Amino acid sequence: MKIANRMSRLGTETAFEVMAQAKALERQGKDIIYLQIGEPDFATPTHIVDGAIKALRDGHTHYSAPSGILPLKEAIADEVYSRRGVRPDVEQIVVTPGAKPIIFFVILACIESGDEVIYPNPGFPIYESMINFVGGRAVPLPLREENEFSFDQDEFMSLLSERTRMIIINSPHNPTGGVLSDDDVDFVSKVAKEKNILVLTDEVYKNIIYGAEHKSIYSVEGMNDLTVLLDGFSKTYAMTGWRLGYGVMPKQLSRKIERLMTNCNSCTATFSQYAAIEALKGPTKEVDEMVEIFKTRRDFIVDGLNNLPGVSCVNPKGAFYVFPNVKELGISSNELENYLLHESGVAVLSGSAFGSHGDGYLRLSYANSIENIDRALSRIHKALERI
Image (tube, rainbow, N blue to C red; front, side, top):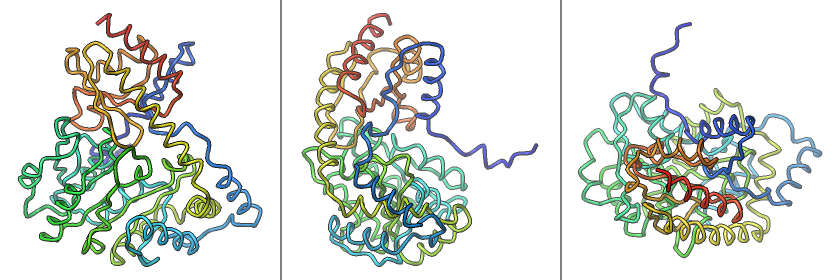
């Protein structure tokens, strides 16, 4: 069988590969603590589940419009207005099965061979994967620990060229948990407006933030027509398996993304969309409690990591990840990831899974219980003493 050459340019998400290895070890009888996957360990709030069940019983089991049902798009428009102060037209909104298709479709629709895209590195690996897949040039924007995992503005400017067609930002950030400052957001918006560059802003962790304010570039005056706002339900509402996301974008682009939806998925599951309405309009008590628990876990795991030999960890302001520095240990991040899984039964991710600037770090998810995090830290401590 001949496979198209472009498939060699398509990357992956290492979290799922590590999970497969961990599951294989579990089947062999090894006890594994999972700190690698970006998935809340909470149940989907009851009112959302009830909304889906009602939708099923009401017969919402057929096709919907490729861009999503109108009641959900109206609820999304209300939510965007309440959080960002700008009310999009429903025609600017496209609902997708998960937020990831927005990355896929927008890059596919906007980037041609040789076009340059500035993206965060370390960063969500699908950014770079899709840029390469369509034949674009992925231009990494380093996020460094000394800048609290934000970027240097002079370095940012040095990466711009006449071929720059898109800038990708992500705040709160996966994998570091960093949050862009107001000044960072204003800086990117100023550059985008001056040079007429499209910005893809990934805000799926916007509600999981601690002691900081989330400023969206979508709310900056003049950015409505230059921004694709990517958001979803997986992280905030513990709905990873429901596969629900959306993009808000200029109408000229939304029509193209709707066409891609028609060709790829036909539509997003209709009953799930009715559940999403309940998520946006229902009570926030369970979400607020989840974020408070995440904060407690964050403080616990950061303290624990900073007590490990050869490890240091900054306190992240958002998401549910820590990104400890392990450079003093003298082995690569990939080697350490493999060592901890096989020797200690702790599944973590190498920072290099998120780009070259992640080497020397690990990503750990604290979407797990305090008890399991404590057990994992104890195992890691013993393993590091044997290096």
